[in-house]
Image (cartoon, rainbow, N blue to C red; front, side):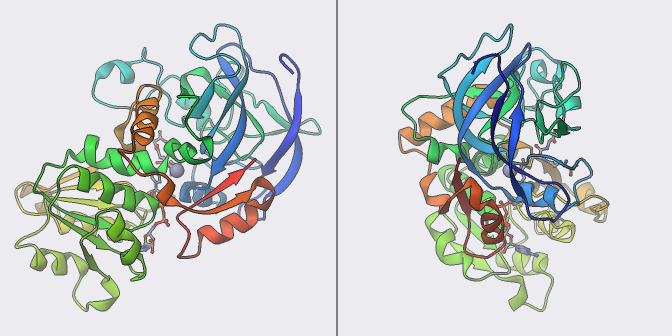
Length: 375
Ligand code: NAD
Ligand code: AHE
Ligand code: ZN
């Protein structure tokens, strides 16, 4: 297949909110600096649902969504040095080139090398897509497009992992789990004994809880409008629970009262701008830090009284938990293999790529954390 167009099945999003269509898609060979990957397993993340909903300002249609996956390199383009056919890999929507201003700064995991292309659904080389259906181009998504049996990604967006790692599990290390763990370990840098509040107990919020527990946090307060979430959340380290619907006071006041002035760290893992405000305002005066993890829709803005910041609260955000993708995803895989981090526990459903619309339906129900599709 090397050097040839591959025809395979992919789930194409033709329009916002219209069911995805399983199509025979043509996948062009990788050009210089590109890698073609046979995707074996992909999970769904709420960011896929967000872009599909039409609320993402970077959302383009028709496209192939998907960014939490694992597979095997099928072929590589000219000049690709770090991976070869047969390597087991995780595609990384957050690239790491190790050469750009961002990568060299030592201050961020964001990478500037291919972002201008991945934000508009094309590849860097020729600003074109490698996907087509009957000659009509289909846009890439987040530089990964994993809802396909084969995808083409930039070489700076591929993490080579231990071939012994089970791909049907470690695909989750492509997004949600690292995002939550890294929000705690890299972005907030939670210290032992800290009090933490987590808004939203989906996969990302539960991974924040796991990160907080391993960081030695004392009180880990889960906040969710679905009280059924507490039972599962306990297994990930949440040791107190608040349902905002059961209180007449604003939730920030409830948490401030519970914690003698506020928490040391809070995390918004929903994507709701009024909850982001509450998450900031439930932080302790003088030092409390709030991390925005949730992705909010186009047009949404955050607000608070500047006095909140003047009096020492800190507002931050995180992308992929601040992890340097190519360097640290293989390390996270090793941590999983050594049973130091959970992964299996976030998988509540397993379906096939052909059942992807049902998988999205499940994702919107309360009992689904991650649904893994076999491709
Ligand atoms: P999810 O939908 O599984 O979890 C959200 C949780 O929030 C649910 O349990 C829901 O009941 C709860 N919730 C909803 N509204 C609430 C409210 N008003 N108050 C309290 N709880 C509320 O989603 P997920 O997959 O865990 O993703 C969470 C968010 O993180 C999404 O916005 C996603 O796009 C974003 N995300 C960001 C990054 C990043 O790099 N920054 C990475 C992955 C996901
Ligand atoms: N196109 C979206 C951007 C959404 C966003 O912030 N994405 C996160 C990852 S979410 C993974 O589930 C991210 O990494 N952002 C950094 C980046 O460079 O995109 C919008 O709303 O505009
Ligand atoms: Zn995601």
